[in-house]
Image 1 (cartoon, rainbow, N blue to C red):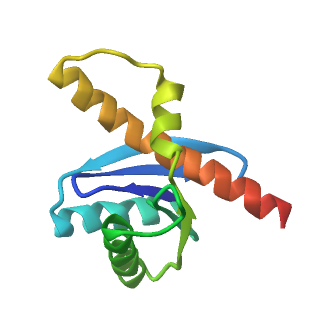
Image 2: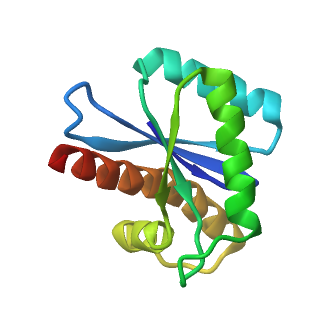
Length: 138
């Protein structure tokens, strides 16, 4: 399972049992920790998750900042609550690539919100696809 963490939304993607396909699953909305972790635990159980990949938002120069630190804190909490090791993967281009994949345009506020909610799980799927490809080469 891959997670695209944000303060307001977390995009979720899963792979099949063969580890060949990465599919966007859902966006978990809201920053309320109990509900967020309850849903993550449901998904971990439902999909038999054995590995968690978390996108790490690095700066363009590869350095980390406040958002990367917040993501690592979130990852530590995910690992503690699920008992599954969290692996971090550079996510610098995943949101832009997800937007490109979705190919959506529009300017209304409601349309932009829906676009972001669809982008998050697609970004998580791109992270997961990258992870699966790297693992297959090992």
